[in-house]
Amino acid sequence: MKSIAILEDNDALRDSIVAYFDLSGSYKVTFSSAIFGDLVTKRLEIVPDYLLLDLHLFDSNIVDRILHIKKLLPDTSIIIITGDKDKSMLLQSLQKGASAFLYKPFKMDELEHILDHIGIHGSYLAPDVVTRFLHLVNDSFEEMYSEKSGAKLTGAEREVFNLLLKDLSSAEIANKMFLPQYKVIRHMKCIYIKNNVKNLQEFKAKFGI
Image (cartoon, rainbow, N blue to C red; front, top):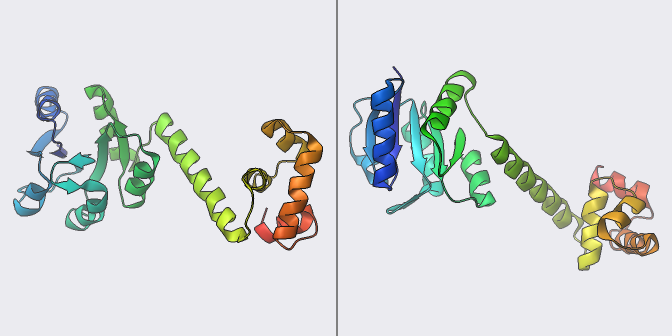
């Protein structure tokens, strides 16, 4: 039977998880605590297959501890359980080695489904989490290119710049920004000048579009 460790400072939730799996018999909870330090200082008799990890424990900033946990328990899949929907937390947790993200409140059978899925596929992201993740990656991608331009753009120019990176036409950009097309074209010309390119073709070549 696969085992679960829990680091969660909500006593009622932690007890509910333990009681659910004691009753279902599908997984065995072998460690349960509200304190990150216990995971480090207490000798675990069984290395858990899964760690249910609250992002906000009293004694630790967990995002910064995920790499430490992965070194301590390299074969343990980490499932983040949190009510914090900060997108940067999502990205950082996944980058540092979390296998799944589950937002509170959740149903116990939902948690069990995620554990089953990870056991087969190695990771799990619910559709709403995937959407958040893709938006965050897209924002980061745009920011990366905006910084790469090195040009000082106005607010409107930067918005046009980011839409050009998505390969939108001037008409599509005008529609999206609720501007006359001639104004968008004027912004595009300013962007070309500030980035030392002559036209849209050179702009695309420079930024790999």
